[in-house]
Amino acid sequence: MHNLLKQTMNYNRILLKLSGEALMGDRQYGIDPKRLSEYAKEIKQVVAKGIEVAIVIGGGNIFRGVAGAANGMDRVQGDHMGMLATCINGLALQSALEDEGVNTRLQTALEIKEIAEPYIKRRAIRHLEKGRVVIFGAGTGNPYFTTDTAAVLRAIEVNADAILKGTRVNGIYNVDPEKDANAVKYETITFKNIIEKGLKVMDMTAFTLSEENKLPIIVFDMNTNGNLLKLISGEKIGTIVNN
Ligand code: GTP
Image (cartoon, rainbow, N blue to C red; front, top):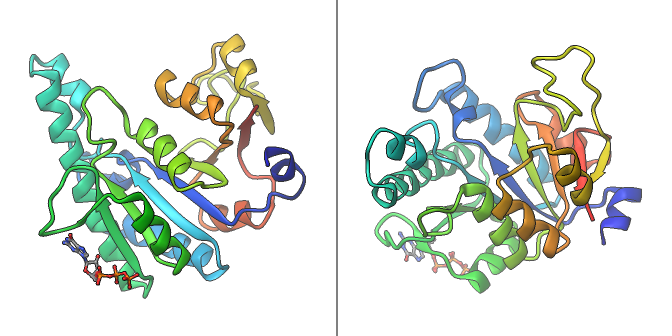
């Protein structure tokens, strides 16, 4: 399947991973309504192309479990707060998408039935088949796991063609492009190569889960308008990681 991706970049179902921090825009914390609405418009364009879209969003703009632990808070407690933060972002994104007329469902790994559906794999797939954007909240529902791991897990579960990891950098470079002007971007790179070169794409749990299940990861700049649509239309945007 990834060979097909290399040649034709043909996506039917994608798992879009959005960073919580990106939702801050220029703010110090919380949600920037302008950025949120830009994201919703970008996603709408992709849905309009008939692509099935599932989304996992982080919560770092509101709370980070690791940061809480660093300040003396119990790690599990912190991670639970982080999971709730992803639900807040999920609700915000759902609302922004609905403002754009996009049908959505929010499913959460922790039950908060009054505000979202509980995560049920078969139901999530059915929603996707009906053209609804499914947002997965509360990460994996377990402490010590990142939302990147949740993104890989859900992508595998719903049989997505790839994870599109939206970042503020337009791909993977041999050295940090924000520190070195001579940094070179990879168009494609293997999981093995990334490990050998010591590059960081996701945490190791997420990364190995993706590698073991042959799930390609595309790292791209989500903050440039039109990039998401270009990517799914086959333009060489970002870096493709595969086996
Ligand atoms: P189809 O049966 O495929 O049409 O899907 P559906 O999601 O429209 O069906 P359903 O009648 O189950 O859901 C109608 C609405 O209720 C949707 O907006 C769901 O997101 C919402 N919903 C369903 N289950 C729950 C739940 O457990 N909690 C919350 N808060 N909303 C739910």
